[in-house]
Amino acid sequence: MISAVRRVILFLGLWALLSGCTSLISSATSGFAEDLASAILDNEDIDIVKDGAPAYLLLMDGLLSQSPDNLTLLNQSARLNSAYASAFVAEPQRAKDMQAKALKHAKRAVCLGIKDGCELSRRPFRKYELWLSSIRLQDVPLLYQLGSTWASWIQANSDNFVAIAQLGRVKSIMTRVIELNEGYDYGGAHLYMGVFETIVPPGLGGRPEVGKEHFERAISLSKGNHLLTKVMYADQYARLMFDRGLHDYLLKEVLTADPRVKGLTLMNVIARQQAKELLDSADAYF
Image (cartoon, rainbow, N blue to C red; front, side, top):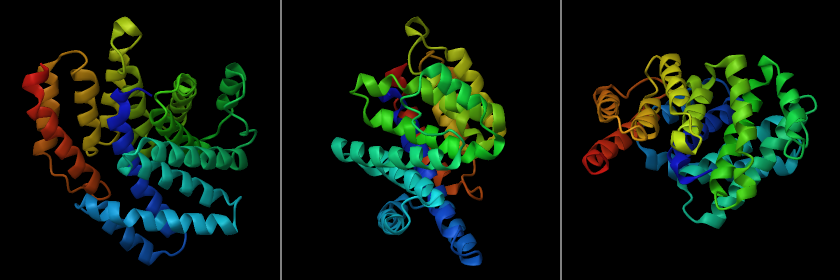
C-alpha cells in the first residue's frame, strides 16, 4: 500500500479497534458489555481509548495462549493488533511486527472458519477468485476482517513490492463483500474500494470515477452518519481531481454535522478534526 491510503487505514483501524473491544467483551457478558460498548463508541476522548487499548492486547495474548485455535479469539486478536498498530504505532518495525501477527491470526481464523480457506496467499489467483465466489453471506465478517487486516499489513510493508503485489487479493475480497452484504460495517468495503481506485491518477491506472461511485454508495449506506466517508471522499477523490468545490462542500458538511451518533461518536469526532486540517490546507493544495 502506498502512503496515500494511510489515512483510511488509520481511521478504519481505529474503528476496528473499537468494534473489536466491543465484540470481545460482548462474548463474556451481556448487560455490562452493552454499557461498556456504548461508553467506548460514544466517547469523545481518543486518548482514553489509546491508553486503554494495550490492556486488551495483553488480554488477547493470554486467552490465545490457552486456546490457540479458538476462532473467535483469533479473529479478535487480528482486529485489535492490526487496529492498534495502524492507529497508534509510529515505529516502522514494530508496526510491521504487529501487522504480521494480526494477518497471521486473521488468516488462521479464515482457515478454521471458512471451507477451503487455508493457504490463500500461495493459491494461484484464478483459484483464489474461484474460492471467493463460493463464500456465503454468513462468512462476511471473517472475510471482511481478513481483507481489512491484509490491507493494513500491506500499508505497513509499503516498501516491499512483494507485499504491494498482494493488493489485488484484498480488492477481490472487498468486491466479494460488496456482492454479499454491501452495508456491512457502514459500507466499509465500498470505502476501501473508493480509496483503492483513487490511489493514483487515471494516467497511472487509477479509476477515480469508479472510486467516486464507491464513496457515494458508502455515504448512502451509512445515511451520511459515518463522517469519515465524506472526509476520505474529499481527500482521495476531490483532491486527486482538483475539485475544490466538492472538496470544501464535503468537509464543511462534516464540520457542521452533529458528531454524536450512537456507535459513531468517537469516529465522527476524529473525522471532524481531520476535516478541519484538510480545509486549513486547501489553499496551499489547490
